[in-house]
Length: 224
Image (cartoon, rainbow, N blue to C red; front, side):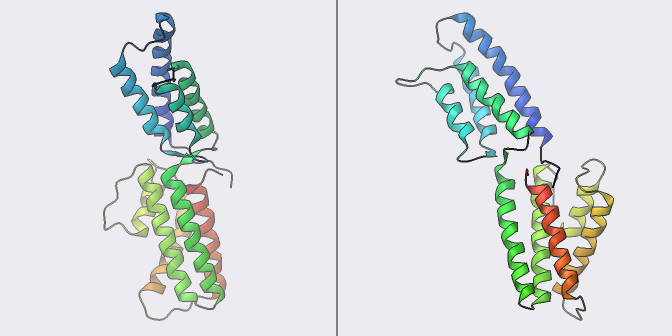
């Protein structure tokens, strides 16, 4: 897997907050009192920074804890806007390099990996139809999680095929035409398994589908 997951909206918000942080740092340095005068504006900026940092998942979110050390004053604690800004810039850099990922997508990657492991287990036990249903469910929910992160508005009636169409649209471009066609084939496999009737797919077909779903969700939901 070579493509990193980076949400342009998050990068843009980082840049906005970093730019504002530089302005606040200059005022803070020139004042020389060590006291934040615009407490309303500073509180709004620092809260927005923490809200953004909360969306990242890395260790126990060291970015949040380090930012709070410098941005939140109190007994025995001195505010240092420059140091807080340094934490924000570090988080932006790590995220852009794919070393910090959005919390919700991190959770999604873990959950759907478990579903695919279960599908592979069922397939090994000979439950081909059940494995196909489960891998289809993992794919649908995984693609929906990625779509919401864009964000793409989804309706309760959007099933796997409409989500695939939205992710491959020129405005989004998260799926190539080839990838979309392969996923549509897996969607048909899932539908045939779930809706009863004759199911003639061989074990090898479902096994290949599990591998394709794993690769696709891995690319879309992880930063590796």
